[in-house]
Image 1 (cartoon, rainbow, N blue to C red):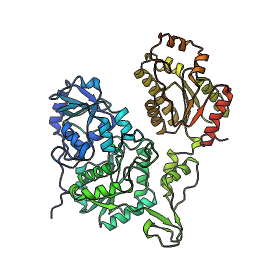
Image 2 (cartoon, rainbow, N blue to C red):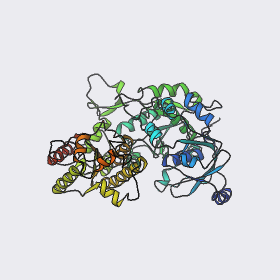
Image 3 (cartoon, one colour):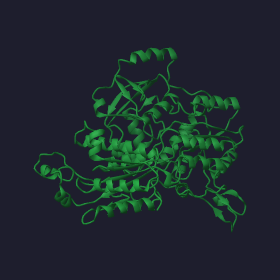
Image 4 (cartoon, rainbow, N blue to C red):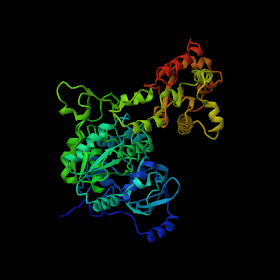
Length: 568
């Protein structure tokens, strides 16, 4: 009986001896330091997780995947796997050359033999792959604001896998999993893809899925990159380990997948299916709104909740993996057990807690009932998500020069220090310029870099339970968003738009900067010769015209109290 899911799958690594030789030769090659996302992609290319890809896609494959989910030879593949690089680096490499691919520490992981170099149409890529060129989608925002402008394609020679210092025993390559399934005699294996902690409902639905498919179960969580704002993978893995004891050991295993998710909904579901097939699975649970990123700019869901299941069903035979429907499980109070939502007995009381409600309860330190989750999972979540009044946070003032940001920020700092309880740090624009960014000028690039430095310091303060108050001009929406994502990984981010009119700012002009800008003596001055992109979704808007500073600072305090960040 042929068991294609259990035979070894091709990898892109060379032998140990060849790798040692190549490492020496690679010393003379141009080098590219991989981003976190590129390292995830490279690892799955080299270990066979992205089989049949032999490297980063060339232009013909990329075009086919973007337009019709197929590579140039007709192979089904839904997500572009490209090496995006900066324009500066692109000037130094041409097709026909080799490039050494290194991790952040400078270790050579692979060599790319460049066959293609091109500038992609990113708006088209966003439209086709993610369904809309809408910056509310995290991958579209990444595409436009973080990914390099030029793509390289070509086959990969794998030298060594990226180093992981965490959860080593839980990380398996596709071939390691296939060998494990062979050894255990598992012929049918159903994969559960997850990027969130598991609660009792998930345990019930995975039990049922495995039973329906008459298969063994692999819990296969993503620990590469998920969506900004998701719970970090260290906490999630500890939660998974806490739940694993609830499953029979002989029928269930867990393995971590170092994948950089794109949150591409239906296309992503297909991609997850191909990756799971490569890891030796025969079935996969596909959820409602599988890998959906949430709401678009108009406040509607990006994808239809069942679009992923429909697309998966359509291509399941070609992928070679069967779909198992994800059933929404709810708790029936009278029966004291979980039921699929469509099998609930008439007249029963149904209890359910949404993800939003769970986050609210964690944030406010409220009870999380035992029917909903396992006590040791809740304990783990409370360790990393304490009640909001005990977390660090950042207040980020933005507005024109002279709008009153620094003055309000100073007043807020004093008020928070008077209350006590958490250390408070003021990262004022001028002070940061002196200590962190003295070498930077005022070009757009340098101003962006200055704001990102402020964001980085604020995120470290927030992570360690302190309060950061920032008061730069921060004129650009994309940079403010990048800072928000940096900080929201660790705590709350409160954007305060100090919306004082430019005429009033100019009237106050204590430093005489507006006068110099009007005379053309200061180039690229925000509000005069350079734009200020006013926030549209700030948590608070204040205007300092005819209003005293104390009142403005008090408004911010009231907002913090309303958000549960400080106690009244």
